[in-house]
Length: 375
Ligand SMILES: Cc1cc2nc3c(=O)[nH]c(=O)nc-3n(C[C@H](O)[C@H](O)[C@H](O)COP(=O)(O)OP(=O)(O)OC[C@H]3O[C@@H](n4cnc5c(N)ncnc54)[C@H](O)[C@@H]3O)c2cc1C
Image 1 (cartoon, rainbow, N blue to C red):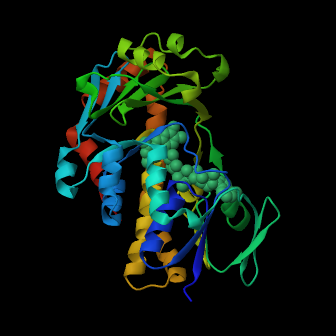
Image 2: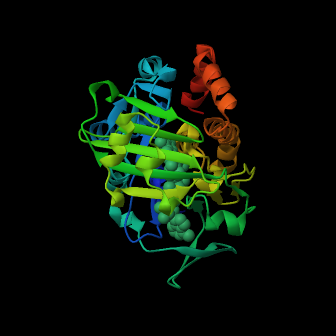
Image 3: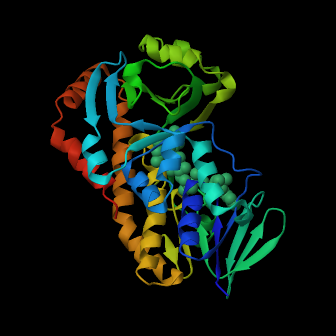
């Protein structure tokens, strides 16, 4: 009988891993703490590297149909005047896929449908994992389960990591983040681009995710800021009116607020018969929009190793080896970009904006080549 691989967590990382293993004939079983596959009320950008993986999985068209193609990424000042414009057409041609902005719920639905809901156990929060001959999994409802192979895809505060590996250090860059979705007729010029406007210690990004919907995110330095008292229209009043219109069109219940956190890079993601993937292994700040894309790449590499003839338990060490350098480069670069985006000092802002405007194209290209090239 084919052995079952038990995955903790049905986020984008756990779901993609389950699909990749299932497509290779392995049995998968997911334990998810939530009572439903509940998306954070937000969108997500699946960059070219993630879409290459979904192309190989045969779900590229489903994702494209449910989302919106993004061909330009723009960093602007608070008045939406460009500081940096990156065209993605070179990569669209090279890899035959585009960056896609999509509602997280739509993406999770596509993945869960492919895996089959029978393989996803909801309301199962792992509280303890113990290693004996097999792993003993204990859930918050006191049920237990034994498993020889476990994948921890349980996010930045991973129980699997905390109990079997180094706990790791969660780092707080002292930035608060609001995310929202609204219905608004976006001007034609914004249809296929991501715009991120940088102001003084704050920024605002927006992107179209479907025919009617726009996803936006806003970040600000959190020192001396009580998020529940912030009126976003007033807070972003010096920003362009197109941004203020997006905020105005968003219902309060469509806004989620969270702290920004990452995991200081840890070297060990696997041990005999257990491995960590996605945020559990290498959570990053969102400044490069690569957290989920890196989780998707993790899953892809596991699949590639299986295709080379390895048994699943023999893939974990090689997976860690292949993935660590790129994932950690993303974590570290993203941390630096976040600091730069939130400068408050007037001269610092001028200098940053000057540097952004005059950045050689080759610098952006080098970074995108690295990010979009699958391991
Ligand atoms: C503001 C913001 C914007 C972002 N934008 C982008 C973007 O545009 N592109 C991109 O690629 N990435 C983006 N990211 C990053 C991305 O959201 C994460 O990297 C990605 O969701 C990680 O997926 P994951 O499956 O590893 O973890 P998670 O999404 O955290 O999923 C973990 C799952 O495990 C479950 N779980 C947790 N604990 C337990 C437990 N004890 N037992 C059982 N189940 C458990 C959770 O309920 C959850 O379903 C962004 C992040 C933020 C904060």
